[in-house]
Image (tube, rainbow, N blue to C red; front, top):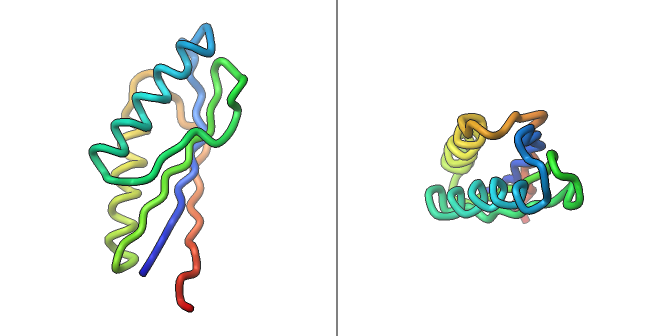
Length: 97
C-alpha cells in the first residue's frame, strides 16, 4: 500500500469575503473528491479572505498510481481560473510495516 499527501497553498485574488473564498475552496474540494476519488480538506488560513491551504490524500496499491492521481489533482488546481498557486508539497507516508 502507498499513501501520499499533496498540500497546496493558494491565493484567491478576486475574493472579497470569507463566503466568496469558501465558495472557491468548496468547488475545488468537492470536484477533486468526485473526479479523482481523493480525500480533501481545507487545512490552513481559515480566517483569511484571499488565502487557503488545501490538503489532498490518495492511497493505492502502487506508488505510480498514487502519483498519477495526485498529478491530476495538482493540474486541476493549477487550471482553476480564480486561483493562483503559491506552493505545492508532497509527503509520502511510510506504509512498509
